[in-house]
Image 1 (cartoon, rainbow, N blue to C red):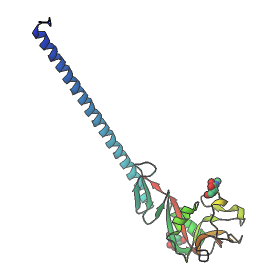
Image 2 (image 1 turned 135 degrees about the horizontal axis):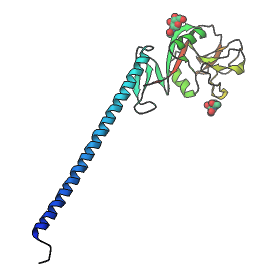
Image 3 (image 1 turned 45 degrees about the vertical axis):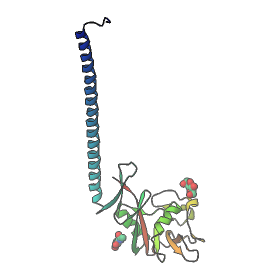
Image 4 (image 1 turned 120 degrees about the vertical axis):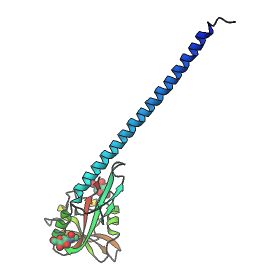
Length: 215
Ligand SMILES: *[C@@H]1O[C@H](CO)[C@@H](O)[C@H](O)[C@H]1NC(C)=O
Ligand SMILES: *[C@@H]1O[C@H](CO)[C@@H](O)[C@H](O)[C@H]1NC(C)=O
């Protein structure tokens, strides 16, 4: 028989080992559940926080727009990107077509009353989106004007620089320095939407644009 000490000591050792293993297991499980509880509480309070933030922002905007239509996922995954209901949305903007015929200046005021501005068209995609639902027989003021009657002074209402190589004038336009406002309309011979300079007092429809609201 090998000298392994008295059988009583062996039993004690095994018992201690079992106690240690079980204690480790219990401690690990407790730690894991503590982590789980903490992370749940953090996630929950974050979602409550972001819900409250959304609600208070929503209340702010309710003074201006009776209802907003939102899409989940904006700049951040948990953001909502919204446009006033009945406005259409494209990339980071919302658009509204005003079918009332009035001067450029009246449209300018109407758009700004709605927290928007006359539309600034910067790309062909944007123009294609805006014009897809417009009436081919109508003309629509946009945010481009030439207040001094100097072709080089064309400015957008939001003061983005006028970029000659991102313009969509109809051929032969602009053609008259006394026509200081710009419309987008459809021309049948070329079957294209494009820009034309017209008299600012001529009553036409318009397109307003605003940046999407992120809740
Ligand atoms: C724009 O304002 C005029 C008054 O200046 C008003 O008669 C018209 O209904 C308004 N149009 C829109 C689309 O808000
Ligand atoms: C002007 O428009 C062209 C064509 O879309 C674009 O490549 C260029 O970056 C624009 N320039 C500025 C200064 O925005």
